[in-house]
Length: 321
Image 1 (cartoon, rainbow, N blue to C red):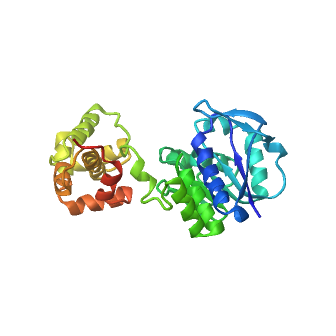
Image 2 (image 1 turned 90 degrees about the horizontal axis):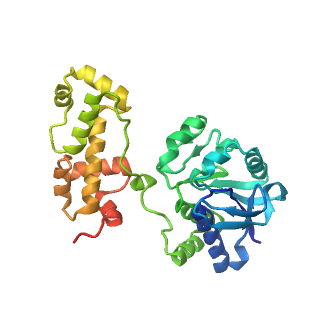
Image 3 (image 1 turned 45 degrees about the vertical axis):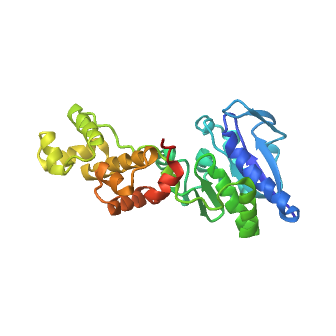
């Protein structure tokens, strides 16, 4: 018997959030016809629904007309999500369908729609790394973790951005039909069954708030531009013409992070750039980024990105001439 999967879209959704999981479920059905999936797409209104890339998807059944038991309710994300948070027809439709679903899932910032429908309260969840802070701020009752590619908390599954919907769907197939079928689907689609590392490896520079005082802004730029310099708190305090205690307090207040932690993040980003654009050995990368030794480089990468420097280079290094 095929499992019924209802996928919810809206104007401005991310097409990959829909197509990735749909192709995982469809491939599972192709490889195992007797235990596959029946896919349905719904939206507030039937008809064509535009993705944010301009392509359209045809929806045959409006969300208000979907009835009967559902195995998996999957809500996609996209740039249109912020405009949909006040759409009561959509939010109430998701909440109603969730009541008849065995499990509920979201891709990317579709987690906000689950949150708005009250489906994440008291649960651990994730979303795209860019908006984890916003999700946590809007729904303080949710335990938001910005690193996992996907999270399963009881009957609720959430995932990171865009292509993470494929990882999520493969995990759902494995939960339904076992590792072997999920592995075969992954091989057929030429993707990882279990992607190494978390989504933090894909994030851009680890941000800290820009100080509003000009001397601290200049000091922040100096840290970023001089990773091998003496960046100890006493030295930085002298450059800022402050006592160490006052400097540490003001820097933390204006950036949201302590000076020592900021220096480590800045040097980690410098190391990451060297791994991406050079073929230098790890000991040279460690020295030139100010981290000193390969052992420190490894510890910093594991702490911030849960991946080794070598693995990061293999995935993200540009071709070096």
